[in-house]
Amino acid sequence: MEVKNVKGTRDIFGKDSTSFQYVESVMKAVAELYGFDEMRPPVLEHSEVFVRGVGEGSDVVRKEMYTFLDKGGRSLTLRPEFTAGIIRTIVQNKLYATADLPIKQYYSGPVFRYERPQLGRYRQFNQFGVELVGANNPTLDVEVIVLGYTILATLGFTDVTLKINTLGDDKSREDYKAALKDFFSQHIENMCPDCKSRYELNPLRILDCKVKEDQEIVRHAPKINEYLSEEAQERFEKVCRSLELLEIPFEVDDTLVRGLDYYSETVFEFHYTSKKGQNYGAIGAGGHYDKLVSEFGGPDMHGVGFSFGIERVVNVMSDDEILPDNPNPLINYLIPLTEDENDAALMIATALRVAGYRTEICLDGTKLGTMIKKAVKKNAKFAIIIGESELEQNSVLVKNLSTSEQELVGAGDLIEYIDSILESEKHECECCGDDCDCDCDGDHEHCCCGHHHKKED
Ligand code: AMP
Image (tube, rainbow, N blue to C red):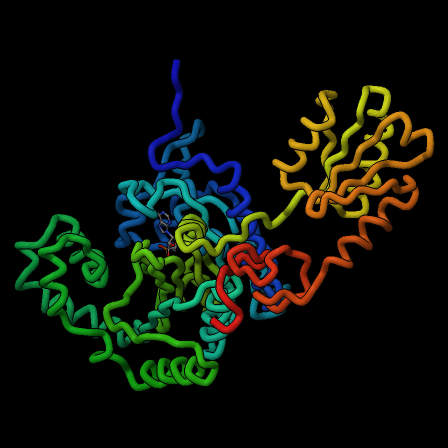
């Protein structure tokens, strides 16, 4: 029987897996720099976590959740997003009472949405994001936006479009929803069935409709900024001023409302079109929320967060060739010439790995030339040949595969020898300016920074 992967899921292996790991590691490292810690909520939650958290009016809850009854008859859902689960965890564990406020968490992992698979849209995909909970301050909205922007800059993105908008406070939104209801009442008869239920549940969601004819009607709908209270207006202006001060370029997009119901005040999206013109939609998005914590039985607390779609980030980086070729290169490829040298190879490999060097042993036992070719194919830095005569001298033969030079090195001096060669090859990289040991030689296409652009870009 031929069994294939489920529609909308992807097998991630080989180079793709390396790219995912690289992107996630940069995202985590930058979030740590901003003082965030990791949280790993379960993939499975009681369905009401999302129904109440994300909102009954959202497309995610109405149409896209993987919901099922378990053998005990409970309605469970595979998480379609992280925020609701993170807030449920914070409230259930009363972190707001024991942890310093604001609580700052980052997360990474798979989410599930029953959507029509297409470019950049999967049914199982991965998100990385952050939540900052327990303080209400527009400066924290900015802090979170800057974190997202810095992650993209660190990954090598230039020309990211940051779109921001405000959904205002409760009063602004209630007034706006009333205005939308009034406006759509003359059109709703001719709109799609989804919009008809959105009209009843939450007219704001009509603004996300993807049906062309409906979008034309939406174009003429009233805009939120006409309904903002003075406080909401001031708060948004503060956010814009801080972003300007930090020289983070942004566009105010008064049509941006986000698809999840919990947002209030500041909302934002990061957009990027690849150099070939491929637009994957938003690569990351987020905003401020003020009811989620109390919705789950916690105190009245605000939060702000964002989420990146890792597949989309990897896809655009791959299109624009800004992924590093080999972020975790193989340093040593050990070649015992016969079985008699296998144990020595195991011991030497252990020492090299303890010293932090990625190391493999070749147990093929074929011709030396064939095994060296394999080392070259694996892009190893050194082939370390272990034969009878070398072992008699308690040594190994180290071949530097980038220079083809080879040297007999005492087994006890091997790590120091590898350290010194790698150290001597470090230079101030002409491309990224880092003290690194890549062979780019000013050839920006091959710089270890992976950014593939000139320093002056
Ligand atoms: P959201 O949780 O809807 O705000 O989405 C956050 C980010 O997740 C988006 O900006 C996308 O990058 C990504 N994303 C959302 N839906 C999908 C999907 N079906 N497939 C892949 N990535 C997605």
